[in-house]
Image 1 (cartoon, one colour):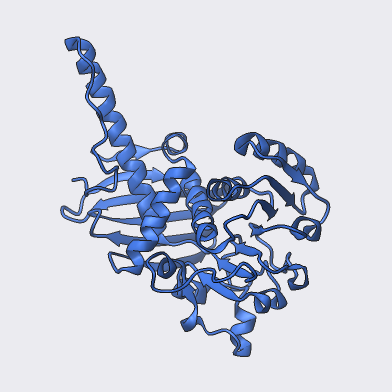
Image 2 (image 1 turned 90 degrees about the vertical axis):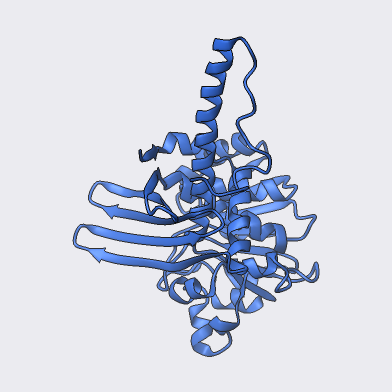
Length: 342
């Protein structure tokens, strides 16, 4: 029987700590060729746009596809399908809007953990849309953040967002009047917009800052100007082949010959020790995040296994109640990534 996991259940089963674990495991597995994926495929249709991501992980015993459609009355509906690698059976379909937000935030968190200074405590966020809260949650999970400053072009939405984010992360999240005000004095700068023109100027950057550009995923979009990219001492991407198709921030420098797609460092390579991360407190580091099918796969697998553990816990509780004894633990040692489920 095919399991269906809706958005409400994903919210319950995928807190940020689990998403961080899933994304890091995905990036490590891909860097060591234990998991594989392909860049996003996009189709422009008369009815809207369709995007597809696919991945496989033999160590988990699954392959996945994520299909996202935007158009008509839909602002973006998506589904991750998990298929058993042994039997070929479709076993789980997961609604993926919240899953995508969490894995995107988690990728920024993993990058922050290896690229930001250890003592980084001030976060600037440019953008206050649907993805921004997960970005703040992820950074707060990996660094001792004391204050967050947020700027958005939508001033009306900004204050309500900051109040909601403050309550969620238990850290002051403050609205500011300009992007430059947000960036000034920050240790970490997160860009999470759909901007077609840069919202961050290179002249604002300061030594020691870490920048994550996580919003735009098309060659005709830019969050960071060319001067800003040029000022970064270290540029890291989630995947070179994805950046080549989607990184508008880097395209102008590639066309000038100052950046080479093939020589970019992937985040997974840093995680497994194949490339260095931050090497000094004075470096300005940049992570360009676009999203990967392998991240969806590992996050979806974790959600699926947590749902199965919940089923086992309910069954065990019922049996324990019936027989007058306490239930046994539903989760095997080692967590949901220990072995593939069949």
